[in-house]
Image 1 (cartoon, rainbow, N blue to C red):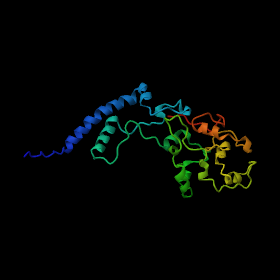
Image 2: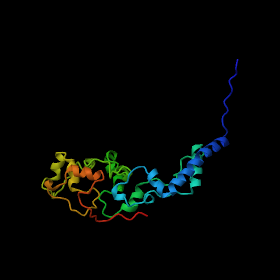
Image 3: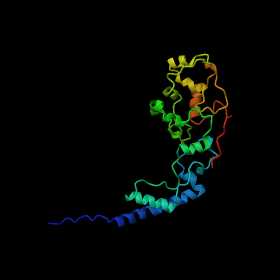
Length: 231
């Protein structure tokens, strides 16, 4: 009767060498891809929206801390259980702080910090406005992925004492005409064009959808504050 051989458990040092054998070639290829300009189009996750066409990859993707070797070593340690979390390899994660580095301005109508207030907790569960990335994305040729009716999340109880519009806001809300909001109002408040005062002059919802999908701005190109140049 054959006796089954007992499976040998690799020693920790053997696991470390195995991880290095796997990670070193990947690190070398990654380093080449990150430093050769012609490789940017190959490793890009997708197309850039036209408003960012002149921004280089490094404008949003900031180099991670440490050298490539240190980053690789940190990830090897993570892979074999000697580190609690992985390290950013090559470039750090893009966050709201990255976006605000160019787009922060004093006239922001809906700053993301406001949505961290307790009164907006329910609204933030519907529209993830506590981060720029909750509405905006990149590498999809799309300006934002929200519906133009998202104003319903916060403004169901809106009342204006001196309503300037020919059809009062309270009437539009009662009729649930949420698709008309962005027909007059620029969400971030940075387009120089003034809001319309008649419903007939409001932009059609299809025009707003086209804009949100990376089309031309119905408010025109003029901005109150231009975005800062990427570093």
